[in-house]
Amino acid sequence: MWAHARWQGRFLPHPLPPGERLRSYASWCNAVEGNTTFYATPAKSTVESWAGQTTPDFRFVVKLPKSITHERRLTGVDEELRSFLDTIEPLGPRTHALWIQLPGSFAPTDVGALAGFLRGLPSSHRYAVEVRHRAFFEDARSERLLEGVLARAGTEWVPFDTTAFFQSPPTSDAERDAWAKKPRMPRRSAALTDRPIVRYLGRDATERTIEGWREWIGTVTEWLREGRSPTVFIHTPDNADALTLARRFHDDVRTRLPELEPLPEPLPTEPLTLF
Image 1 (cartoon, helix red, strand yellow):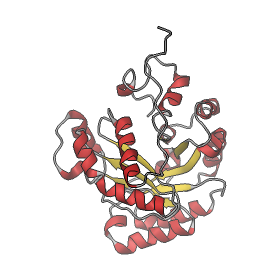
Image 2: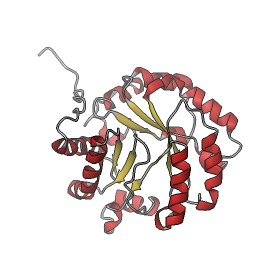
Image 3: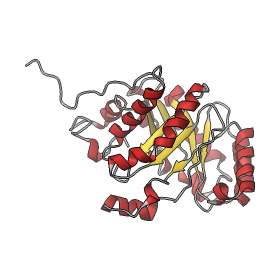
Image 4: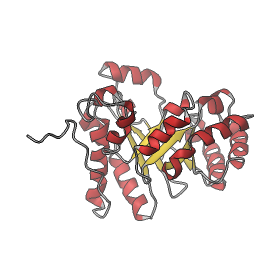
């Protein structure tokens, strides 16, 4: 995400070498979704570069490869998992959570496989699971089943809130594309651990995105008051303004909780000169 083309020259300096793009992004936000690892495990040298561009308190929520979660559906993956964990080792404390995103076909009948997989994970990391089968949200028994498995493993349930996005038909090409691809997920706001993670999808129109996250402002504020450490990712269909929206969300929480530390000051998009 930190190399998003719509941000270059607008929020991030352009041109910028690949080895500096994450550093610039990290001056805007203090967390990132590690989505690229879903498609392929990166070279260890690449991960070392990520660590070198960020401070130890920067948060990576790193997605497990799809070969583990979608293709093998959490079974017979010990070797791949060991290789993946070894590759991301340079991130050290920056690995806030390993993100286990499961396919929409992963149903309540598959929870046994998830329970076995979680039991075999090393305690050196924190874990968070995202499910997309609607039974987990609409059937109380299925919801309790999953919550029990996750709670026993000290694992968080990651909600992907798309309710604001699907409130009315799309009005742009980016929204129409997302309309066809994104899951229609109900809002879920219960935290299972001290590190809740929220994924929120708004609209291309800024005011509608802000209106849709108002409930999350109250939820996140309450989590902070309880001593939890939440991480919130703000998306829109084109993500063109995602950086400023993320900072706006943080500012909205600070209006209710002034003691919350501000985000870092963004680096300038133009190089500094003497004249």
